Image 1 (tube, rainbow, N blue to C red):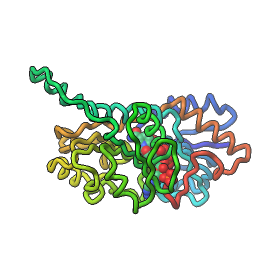
Image 2: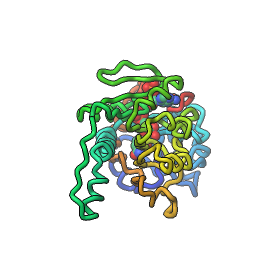
Image 3: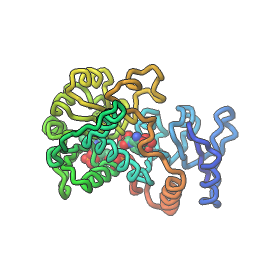
Image 4: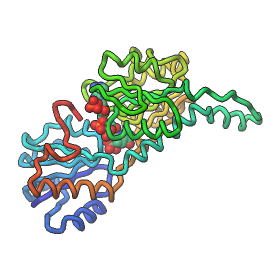
Length: 313
Ligand code: NDP
Ligand code: OXD
């Protein structure tokens, strides 16, 4: 079978080498945009943020494996009519995400930034310990990553709340679902973590009229997509003190422009979309496993990570 590969922002050579080693009986080729006639007609694609021309030139594609968990960029494209989209599920990302979010929450809860600042200023300060039982961390999105994050936070005995589209019953987690329960969920959170997929329903969900339900002095951690957040609203709420601080890993424009106010804001911590990296070996192993199941006859709709294009995730 022919597989076409196109991934921007990564070195394709090493990926192709690993994929070819794992699938020696199949032909895997790097897509050539300049000379479309030279691309063998492929049934399967492995992609990260390919240009529209990739799909326009290959309407015969049956299945597309996304080299990431989020498929928002892919679903904004016009895709081949019969192509099913399969995303990465976990593939080594959830442990990284749990680690990243936990360190951000712990820094806020334990006020490490303030203690470090005091030490730099020559002080030896005492801060009264906060009450853990009163520091609820809310996780928006209780999927593969959100649930792992929630469980990691529980390990440190933070009360955890979760918000999802469908109602859930999860051991030890106070759950909320749907738009109606969003204000109550927000009101319960001392820190809120966004781990939602970016869909028409969730774009700009972190805006003034949702964030204003947070208690005064709450923290925001956005590790999902930049377009979940309305930048100006966050800046205004940091200025007013309603939001005490934000940790942002994702931005509506990436790379974040060097002059962007987020970069130098004293209440914002930024990282360059690094909270959970796509790991090559884990991702290749997962895609190869799913591809083999598909070749053996499992319908794409039955593969784990199958994306419901109407739902958007
Ligand atoms: P999943 O699809 O497993 O989980 C999505 C969760 O979001 C589900 O619980 C779902 O609810 C919930 N959800 C979806 N739409 C809504 C809505 N309208 N209202 C309320 N809840 C909603 O995704 P993952 O956990 O694998 O990944 C989440 C996102 O994290 C990715 O889409 C990506 O954008 C981002 N990401 C960021 C990375 C980074 O490095 N910064 C790395 C990897 C991913 P339900 O359970 O009811 O379906
Ligand atoms: C992803 C990401 O969606 O890297 O996997 O953001």
